[in-house]
Amino acid sequence: MAQAPRHHDHDHEHQEVPSELTLRVKAIESLLVEKGLVDPAALDALIDTYEHKVGPRNGARVVARAWVDPAYKARLLTDATSAIAEFGFSGRQGEHMVVVENTPQVHNLIVCTLCSCYPWPVLGLPPVWYKSAPYRSRAVLDPRGVLREFGLELPENVEVRVWDSTAEVRYLVLPERPMGAEHLSEDELAALVTRDTMVGVGKIEYPKSGDAA
Amino acid sequence: MNGVHDMGGMHGMGAVQAEKDEPVFHARWEARTFALNIAMAASGKWNIDTGRHEIELIPAADYLRMSYYEKWFVRLVELLAKTELVSREELDTGHPAPGVQKAKPLVTADHVPALLAAGSVASRQIERSPRFRPGQRVRARNMHPAGHTRLPRYARGKLGTVDRHRGAYVFPDTHAHSLGEQPQHVYSVRFTARELWGDEASPRDAVYIDMWDDYLEPA
Image 1 (cartoon, helix red, strand yellow):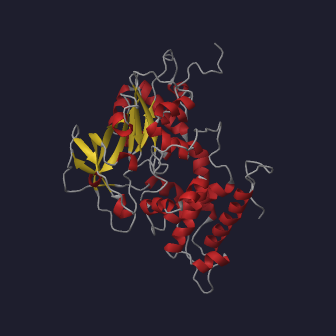
Image 2 (image 1 turned 45 degrees about the vertical axis):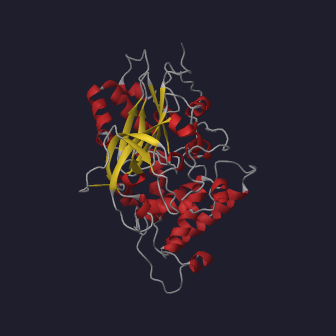
Image 3 (image 1 turned 90 degrees about the horizontal axis):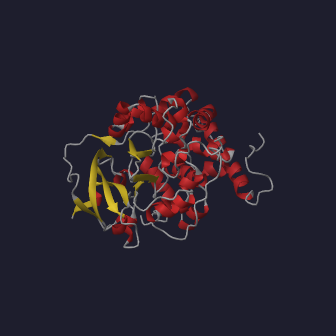
């Protein structure tokens, strides 16, 4: 089989490293398949799950429900794992969920300084920046500086709470419901919720910047 | 271990660079590496803590240079060899040793949804009651184990306040080294930014860290 196509380009200056990895990964996979330990179709199914089925749209549905249904929100803030499981979102890297609520006084931010723990069932797999040294090193030391790099300037009177995911608890931020969106349906509200707002590095945009005034 | 993976509070790592419309995987080898790690972990030959520690064992300069999935690849190969699921010779030749009986796949495609849905529950019921209660002042112990720990360096020796009890969980410091689950209570502990980083830090901000009993002492 030919080398799998890559998203970045032929002329990319770092091409050498990934091509070598393409070959090394392929070699291990064939060895494990030959030994009978791995079913390639299972690998396809695992990849398909996180490329197409599980991602931040899950978390967005949870957030929108919490915005429109106070009883659901109360359940979500007291037992997030069960409340999230009401949507069928559960399992690997979401076994022990905690939801932290943003308010006009408190802004929450999630990090894993020791590795890259992230709530997979509601957000999917983490983006590169979340796993990167700059984010992991600075989110705890200089959260306001990090947020500024994401275009978020927080007033001095807002308390920033950083949640370092050192144990098996996985965090999700419940962003503030935007003002002026009272007429939107739950689905329309969910469409406003982005991954970044649920990690705590973004604010809900409403009306969305692309929308006509 | 006081490794480079324990990054909280370090300077010099540069600005955060977020990619717009980032794909889940940037190359097929990343996707295959991810899936191979999950599929082979189903062997039960290692656990999540062993897996994390294996990545911490990557030499510091390599750790910083390698991409995330490159580290996952190194981890996979090391664990396959250490657990003898694959021999060093097989890794060299790329083929099963002659005469080795063919195994059955650990995970088949139809088992994937159940595998992911089950996850791996780390909470345990234990007899002992929690040593600390919400509101209590505690100090993170000043300890520097050479093995795996989830007590970040930036918190060691610092004073905090127990925010809430999280339940009892498998203890990574032993679990990573095949010394048993030894579950103990975990607390969310609030450390003010000023306690961690000094007077230059915001007077309002705080970091919440999940701490096992053995990481704490009464203050």
